[in-house]
Length: 75
Image (cartoon, rainbow, N blue to C red; front, top):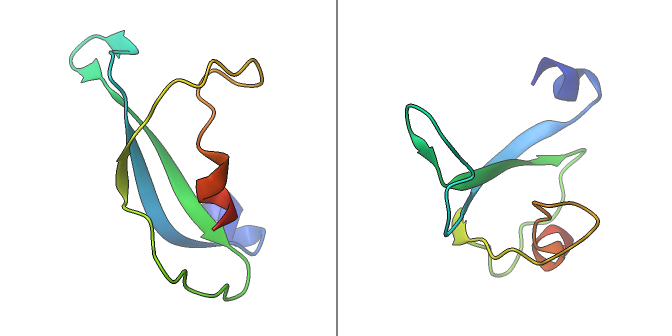
């Protein structure tokens, strides 16, 4: 967070993507991905904010194995 703040970002929210499978197991079964919503300045609040916890579906993307929903990032 220090690096984000040093670069001028503010933490707005925290998102959790629930996966239908375990990506790893050790002391716990890892069934989620997480992301922070960062901003510079004061972006407008969306008319319909997304939920902070949502299902994640593997997209089959070759760009990144845990690619998040692009539409969410555009809101």
